[in-house]
Length: 256
Image (cartoon, rainbow, N blue to C red; front, top):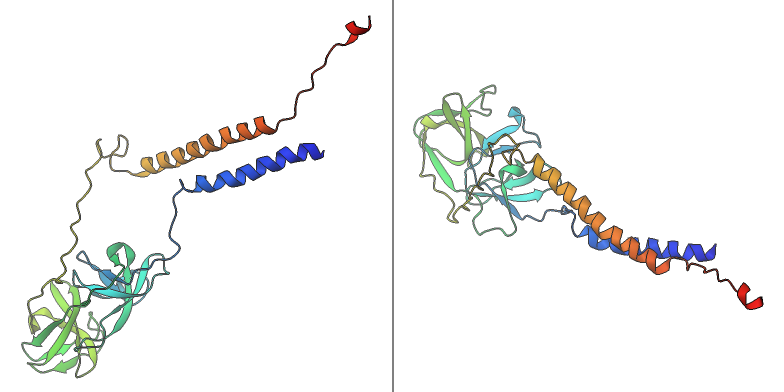
């Protein structure tokens, strides 16, 4: 019994040792994301008050090419971020952006946030909410506000602003503001080259638009690779430690 247990123990030990190199061929996901900030590299990126993308969670849409500081990346779909630093008339507000709409950056540049100042072109009412459901606040022509982002409302565009002197946030109609030139961040945006479409008619059958076939193929290749490594190893271990065959010899002729 003890002799039989020794080969089994050796085989199990070999399997444990061989499992380590096999893991190198399997996909892995980082346990933590270490982005210091994220960059807005496309239009239409919303800044949310909560970690959900419902319309009532949208505060405004961010200016393209600028950055946000990352507070927390634990949520699977959203970064918890900070917009603004509380300096130069810019507030510091916390909200969420969708991970698939921004680019994570390991090291933050010297300038993160836009610095756009607009002036009221006429006496106007500041809307606390974009739908005008809350009582507006009246301001006089010539007062200045920091632009934080935009908010489409029907056929017009609202600007989400911050008034440093009054310590207030809200929305102004674009026609009420004398806008500065909205320049991009001095660091050029990355150039994204779209991949060449695979051959086929795009229906997912002949290498077209559906990527599920490629994923299934990758999974099959991983299984084949694991089997190709483990089976020969088991055969080798078995050959090394298999019990010796007893040979029956006929000695009767010596005693005739």
